[in-house]
Image 1 (cartoon, one colour):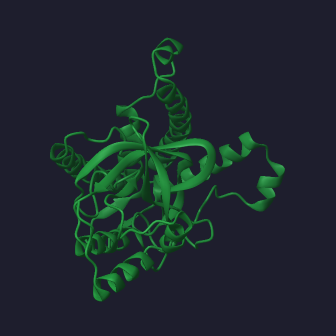
Image 2 (cartoon, rainbow, N blue to C red):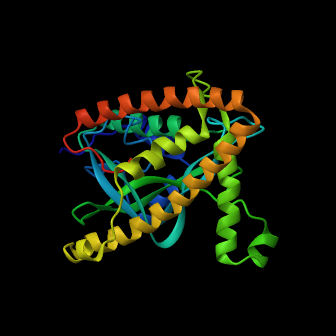
Length: 308
């Protein structure tokens, strides 16, 4: 691919587009990466992004991010309200953990298209009134074990929208690790089971549980991870290490899913009409998502195994 041609105007636009993604300029500088010069630009998605890209990529392929963990750790006004926010996926740094996702690759972009792609990413992911993410260039592992640097949005623990584990300082000091996880899961599950709101742009009634089901529960059920020793013996070292880490990720998400269902049943007993309305909205959201996911998978030769 020929080097992208920039002039003073397009260089300033690129600078502004990078600045619109909090943290990206600092990360690029630290990694000594110039987006205007590298032939392929990668964006890593770990939720809705692979199913509905912010900007059409040349390819979407399965990929993994090591030493981070997906969690419902960020507040969301899109699946809740300003007074009772839902939760959405974010990435926390956890050594040894793995994030299943996909790389969106852009390899034939002009200077103008590169700027448009970055601006579209900011429009999709940056909620100015309630910031939750920062953007970093991180090393992503492709399915074949090769590596690539990709723009990745991670949870910003300093942002007002960071929910984290939801524990108080006293609880982190007094409770064991197992007790802390139990309390954290209970609190997150209650929020996810109840929170709902409307997307500002579309007016669609959205629920936090629908988001969790679409981008965590259903993909997890469709792609269960086996750690059967007989199967692991037949795997490469890369695949074996990956499977063990993915099984731990799924174990955590299964615990959260069980608790969400428990809280939803409690809510159903107390307010059956309210739950009926939530479930109607969820059924519509999931049906739209399935159609969108199928459309995305049909478009690309190799759909991602795991789908932000």
